[in-house]
Image 1 (cartoon, helix red, strand yellow):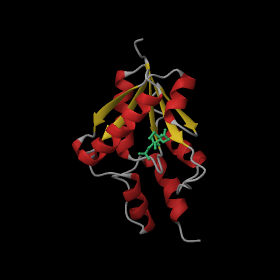
Image 2 (cartoon, rainbow, N blue to C red):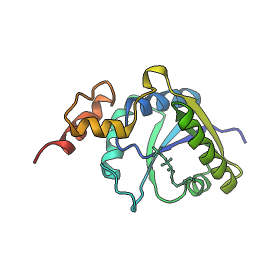
Image 3 (cartoon, rainbow, N blue to C red):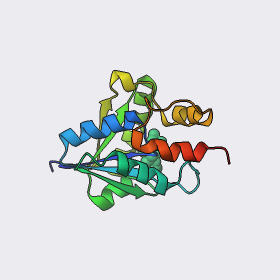
Length: 162
Ligand code: PNS
């Protein structure tokens, strides 16, 4: 069946401009993009799922065909439950490609109806990662070229000295 909807899953801890680039490009291809925020109780993120979703919703306000959801458990399970048959993932380089290929293969074994599409990161986004943003934030660096402006207040507040 042809797909009008895709899922862009991730930790988004926090959302970066690299993520936003993938979301915008996916939104130009698909009628609807569901951005899925992984809720993993065993892996406590830097930001709560609510904060991550809030940052994403604010950053995606100008893109009408984007919805933000959360999920726990397996991606394959979520795609079965929602009937979404295409997962989009951004790929920055060979390391990402290797990891993402393994994940895509496993997901397809778990849900044979599921395809994963890779979008190569735009050159200016190639070095951005959420873990790098967290490190820079911890040392008070300027984050404006790495994260959407809507996320800045939440990130600053989280790293502010008490
Ligand atoms: O932003 P990330 O951390 O690169 O996203 C990875 C994510 C959240 C998409 C992935 O780890 C995930 O969905 N995990 C849930 C468990 C699962 O389904 N794993 C895939 C089979 S290996």
